[in-house]
Image 1: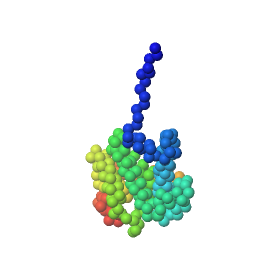
Image 2: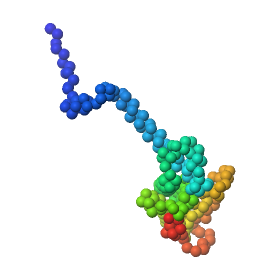
Image 3: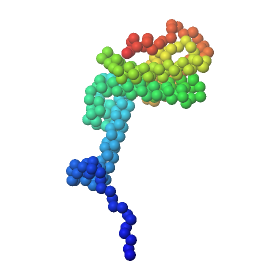
Length: 247
């Protein structure tokens, strides 16, 4: 006698699940593969949008360094490798773009300060790495954009500025506490020199400009070594001194 099958029949969907399936359009029932494909497409679109945004911000900081915050959007779009419509879709007007470029530069430079201190063998090596990395991030893009109509008191800007200042102060103080960096300088001195030395003259097309930037930054950094070989005129520049003029 043939035994009855012991395989249990599939359980009926619970009431909520059944109701949910019945509530779906007939064309959508049983199309799990299409749903997965739709999710993947959506994720891909978001990834493309993030990449485009990053390209725009990176291109804009370079253009603003060279030509100031009034630089044409066409040039930013060209360098980013996108169309003007894509640029305006992400940043509908100039103040919005300037705002986000400043945030972008501040966030990346602050991250460089923290990483340098955590990963380098000593505090002076960390200071050197940070200074050159900040130049590569085009921190000089900040100054041309801090015009009279720039909203330096925006909550996002205040938070980003505070995080950046804290990271750089921690880095410099570590160098001074270790006896490797002269103590008669302040964070303001470092940021002024970095800003001035990390950008070409406006409107110029200096070939191999990075080579000159890093050469001059290293000359500056050598002057920060302790023991100091000279007495500096005036007093150390603080971040409060810079805020009175810039933010």
